[in-house]
Each structure stands twice: as C-alpha cells, then as structure tokens.
Amino acid sequence: MDTAQQPGIQQSVVRLSDCIQLMQADLVHANPTPENLGHPVSDVLMYDPLDNWSSVDDRIILAVGCTYGSPDFDQLLHRAANSNAAAVIVKAHGAKMEQLRSAAVGYSLSVLVAPNEADWTRLVALARASVMGAAADSVAGVRLGDLYAFANAAASITNGAASIVDPLGRILGYSTLPGQPIDELRRITTLTLEETTPPAFDKDFKIVYGAPGAVLVPAPDDGMARLALAVRAGGELLGSIWIIDPGEEKRGAALNALDRMAPLAGLHMLHARSASDFGERRNADLIRTLMDDTPHASFAAAQLGLDTANGLAVAAFSIVRPETGSLESVRDIHRLLHLVTTVCNVQFGTGHSALLGSVVYALLPCKGTSPRTLHGRIIQEIQAYAHTISSFPLIAAVGGIADSIEDLPRSRSEAVQTLNHLLNLQAREATTPGEAKAPGVALYEDFRIPLNLLKIGAFIEENGLGGADEIAIIQARDAEQQTDYLDTLRAYLASNGTISAMAAQLHVHNNTVRYRVARLAEDFNLDLADPQKRLWLWLRLTTMDLAST
Image (cartoon, rainbow, N blue to C red; front, top):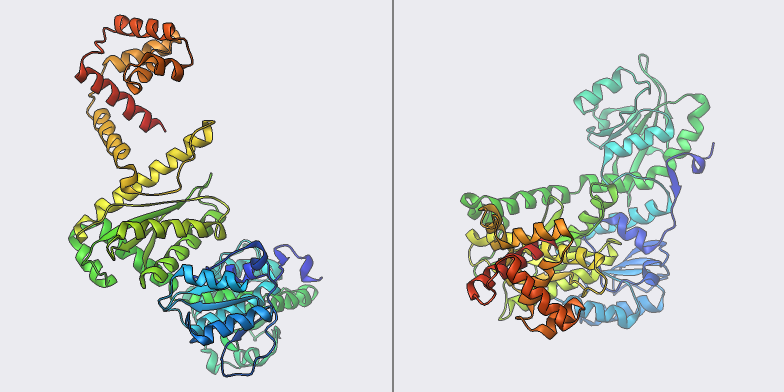
C-alpha cells in the first residue's frame, strides 16, 4: 500500500511560509506579504561574495558575514532579487528593523532576520531539513521536537512499536500505542532509556548507518526483527529510528513510509536536541524569580546579566483567542515568544523574554532620552508582525519604569492590569455597536486614571463600603420595576447637570429629563447639590462601569 494513502500522512507543498514554520529558529520576516510567503523553495545556499554566482532560483540564501549597508549586502540583495531567490537570511548586527524592511521592500525580496547570537551552522541544518521536511510527507498534529509523539505517529503509520535513538545509543523517544508486540530488548531499552550495546560497537547500527534508506534488520535468536532508518540533516548523523517488524504483508509499506518520514524525522531531532528549550526554561525561571521572589531577585538579575543602571520596564503580550489549551494556541503563543525575543534582540542587542502561563513577558531596557517612546514603538512593531504568527489579534502593554530590581513586580502588575483593560475594551467594542475602536497596545500611563479607578472600585468592593448606599438602592429599584434611574443619574453626572446635554445623551425631551431628575432626587432623597455626594455617586458609578467592561 502506498504511504500517501495511509492515515496520519499528508502531502505538503514547499513554500517559504512552510519552511519558516518548520525551522522555528526565531526568525523575523522583515516584509511579509502573501506573495513572498508563498514563494516556492527548492534548496538552501550559503552565500560567499567571492564565489562565482550560480543559479539561486527558489533558494533560501544565508548571508554569512554580510551586514546592512555594506557593498556585499547590497550586491547580495540585488543578485538575489534578479535571480528569483526565495529569501535571504541575515543578522541585524546593529541595523534597525526599519532599515532592513526598507531594503527588503526596495528589492521586492523576502528578508528573514535571525538573532545575532544564532549559530549559522545550526541555521543551515534547520533550513535544509525544513525544505526536505516540507517536501516530504509530514506527520500531522505532532509538535516539532516532541519525539515521543513522533514515535507514536511513526508506530501508527508503520504498524510496529517505534524507538528513536541518538548516535550515542540513548533512547530519545519511544511509542506507547497499546496492542503492538514488543520483545525483551525493547522492554529493557525503554526502561533504561539506553541501548544495551553502544552503536559504535553494534554491527546492526553500522549496517543501518551505511544504508541509503530504511532497511530490514534480521531478528536475533531471542527477539524480533526490526525496520531501521538512519536520520541525517545536512549530512550530519542525528540518530536512527527502529520499528518492530510488522510482518511480511505490511513490511514493504512500512519501509516505504519510514523512508518518506526521514526528512521530517531529522527536523524533529534537530529541534529536540536544540538548547533553545533549556534556554527558554532557564529564562522563564529567572524572570519569574525577578517578578515574584524579591529576596532572590538580585541573584536572578546577575544570572541574566541584566543592565539595570537606567531602569527596566516589563512588557506583557497575549494573543486573543476564544479558546486556550489547543495545539494551535500553544503553537501561537510559542511563536509569539520567539517574535518578541527576536524583535527585542534587534532593537536592544539583547532580549530577556519568557512565557509564564499564557502571557509572554519581556524586560525592556530604558535607553536614550525617551525610553517610553521607544517602548511604545517596540510593542507597535511586534503587533505589526503578529499576523505572521497567528490569525488572532495580539494585545500588548508595558508597565511603568522600575528604577530598581525591587520595583519589577510593580511594573509587571501594571503591565498585566493594562493588558486586561485592553482585553476588556476590545470585548466591549465587539458587543457594543458604534463603540470607538479599542487599541491593541498601550503603555501603563495611557490608562493610568481608569486603572487607578479600578483599584479604588476593588477597595470599595472588598471593604463593603458600598453596602446599601443610594447606588445599590437605585440598582434594586431599576431591576424590580424596569426603570432607568441609574442611566439618568449617570447622564446627570457626566453632563454636570446640563439638561440639554442629558436629553441628547438619553434621546428624550428636555422636559422628560427635568421630570426624571426631580423624581430621582425625591424618590431616593438625593441632594445633588452636595459636592461630596456627587463625588461619591460618580465614583461608585464609574468604578462599576469600568469593572463591567
């Protein structure tokens, strides 16, 4: 049976967007458009300005050693554009994203910006593996780097229990599908997570490593036969996949499926062995300590190498989705983390970001004479790129400047408060026709007053200060008799008692407004001429309205 018809395998078309997604290498696209993201990709090329120019049609070019503004850089972009290259991967090395975007747009070329500290060797391997992985059949629904899930997918497709082994003989992942037969060797290796004989001294491994594709490994005296495949990326041996032989009838299809999975297996193994996961976990732990554990914050700052001389501000980012916890939402939030990290690296030369819960946090330095202007520009730029990582909108907020490490929890709290306020404003906009368009990004000071009023409202609520005051009594009357006294009072306070303004707001006649105000004062014994009474009523209504958005 042809593997193209087997469940779990689907054919992919090699487009630039596919390769970027499969690479997951913190790349930021300087000028994403549907046209250049859909550009076909055939191969990867390391660029050397001294080499004779060869055909680069549909290739991804890695611009090693080329910096923005240099003759080599301009020459590369000119040649790449004229030769129909798929994209050029560069490092910023001090260039602003606006400059790189302008150059990309000028040449009508996809320019992908990699972090300055990215290893070119790893980028080449990821790029080549991504091209091969997109061209081959891909196992649907498996997160890149999750070798246990990949092993389960491989076992399902080949009908045999699967194990993934690195060149040193360590078990990186194994399948756990019920009902598939295994032998004693399989039991031992999954318990110890290690082969009984190192691959360097095992003749079966040597046969597999020397074969051009998947092979049948005969059964030992006391075990079962295996199907095995050496996994490589860019000529580098990453390890091997071993499948318990499903039997003669299914063997041919299983070998064929294993061969077709080879490129994607290499991509999974590259991501699994990457130190990026460790780095993300370490960053998350240290940044969480900075914001939640003040006694140990100075130690975490030293571990991160933070420059706190001019202060820091905490930025918070989130993707507005109707549901969380799905594979798609997890993918989107991790893409957001990579986007935030890369943009901060480009703008500041360093980036300290972490995913905590469902929110991505970044520590923004306070450089120059107008740090808040820069902070606003950073979150706007990240929002501008958000459509490249998710079809759902992004919201972002920056807390106030923390002059010391001890002030970072306050900055984080302000960022989260602002983020939640933006989310509430967008929710109200969606349900209230004609409502002014809610912003997607903001600094804390943009909403300082409503956020402080929300704190006052929370204090009133927590301490029972509202009790059975006039607002509570009016609310009860409106609910019981379907009256609109609260709206009348709200309009009165908002217009400073101006009858004509109230009439326009409530869409009634001036005489109707005068009647309602008189009834309001009489029925609830309200002295609306008392400034303290008006202040309290306004405070209660305003904080209630803000809390209900």
